[in-house]
Structure formats: C-alpha cells, structure tokens
Length: 172
Image (cartoon, rainbow, N blue to C red; front, top):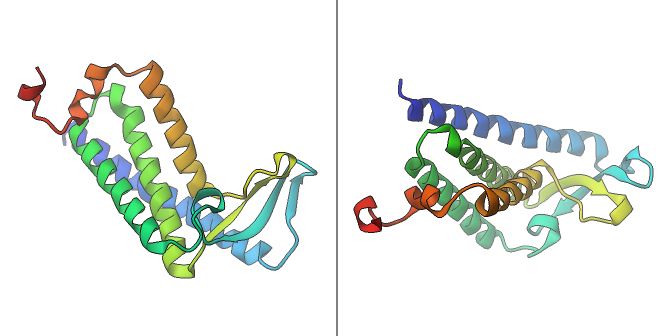
C-alpha cells in the first residue's frame, strides 16, 4: 500500500475519532449539565457550563443554518482538495492534520445544528469571560492558529505550490 493511501486511511480514522470525541463530550454535557448549575473546575477561572449556541463560533451569526451548511461544505471541499494535492511527505503532515481537524470541527458542529437545531457549548473561561465553546471549536481555532504559524514561519511559497489550481508546468 502506498504512503498516500496509508495517510488518507489514517486521516479518515482520525477524522471519525475526532468527531466521536466531540459528540461524546457533548452527550456527557447534555446528560450531566443540562438544567443544572455549572461544574466548577477551577473556581473563578474555568467551568463546564451548558449552553445552546444557535450561531457560529462564540455565538456569532445566530440562526443562519444555510450559511453554516455552505461554510462546512466549503471547508470539506478545500480540505479534500488540499489533501489530494499535497504529497504524503512528513513535511506536509502538519497540513494534513490541520485539514483533518478543521473538517472534524466543521462536521462536529454541523451534526449538532441538524440534529438539535443548535450547537452544544460547554467550555467556559470565567476569569476572562470568554465566550462558551466546545471541542469542535477547539479543533477549528487551534488548526487555524497553527496554520497561520506554519504559513508565516515554516512553509515557503514553493512548498505550497502543490495547492495551486494551475498545472505544475504553468507554474515554472
């Protein structure tokens, strides 16, 4: 079996495990925190707090389900395109993982939107009154942060030429 196939199989497994973790944490929160006071992890700093988010990350864009579906489809399409174009080299493993986690985050929250009509959020940094979020939001936010760091400090323009829409002959 070639490296690309092994990588894609690993990414598919990681994708479903990541979605599973997100959904499992949300099920636990619904079961144990819905209609109950927050569970304090660190008093005044961090709590598990049940919240129904009908918007995007951190409560933005309330009630725009069609928009969220479109965004999720775009994320999945860009991730699939990127994975198909990137070599299976170790150098590109961080980008493959970013594509996997971004996709898992988009799908994890989309599952909530279509099964519940809202996204279950529960992680709350009370100390700074940060908006309540969930595991899928972590996947998306951390992936984008790491992507920006890699883009700025690790990958060179020629490293990312594999993602160009132009054929390789046209690039040179």
